[in-house]
Length: 373
Picture (cartoon, rainbow, N blue to C red):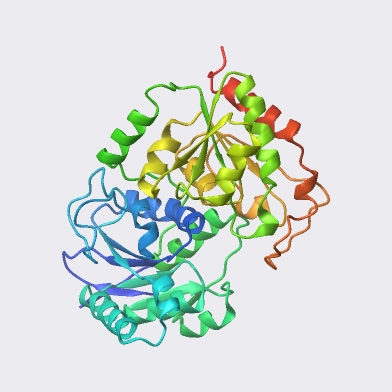
């Protein structure tokens, strides 16, 4: 026997909760943008089993790091270490790209298909819209495979059984449209609860022991050159905010992070480079007085944690993918034009944003957050 959901999809009748697979492989900002829809679904149906297919480098957005991190699939009762999903599957596309024809890659893909199918998903939703995410979703063999009618990469739609038209402007709201239509629910963006990693929390407490609450995080990198504000200007902002009495921390993936080191140098030593993992970044962002960044993952992480942000936008549209769900000051010059061509040079409109504007926006947010007396 079967029951029909309101949109026509089929799921087994009986006591077994519905099983839903989210495919959003990366990157950080895109994963975070998909989360409010999944959080809304979790609130409506806490008993449903939700899985997520993701690049392992971003898995700490779903589950706190642990000593057994090499296990591909995870399942347990929800807690602070894994608040949003029941399980996740690693899709190491970065590694596959480096060795596309190796036997290890073939074995990984075969194992992934077997694991996805083993969980007998009722619905799979491709929230990425790329060819690779559509292929992964198709491998799951779910009862219904849904995606956007006009995905990011058009050929991806050929693999969907159900194509859903999207009308919302912001990608967070588009995610609610897409997932909601796939499962037959009206979803509104819900607050995202990110994992709490005790080890990362202890690391952050130790880092901030001599700093206190008066600190600002600068995340100076971007997905491509046109979105990246000059490091010299980030350095000037850091120096100005330091003179105002704040400690400035520059987020970096490692101690050898070139852009981060250049910002510290440009600040005249006013800023401190803070290499951290994704889990440590979550702990750090939770405590930040304000976060300053371009259209990049750390900006959207801070927004998900409801920390004040200053967003510097150029060739991308903040109406579509700006910071969502937090107090924000978004700076974008009128001369900026939408362009996703991934040019290496900083976009001309982004260059028109001044250090003085950024400092003023940051201080305004800090006053609102009652960090400045």
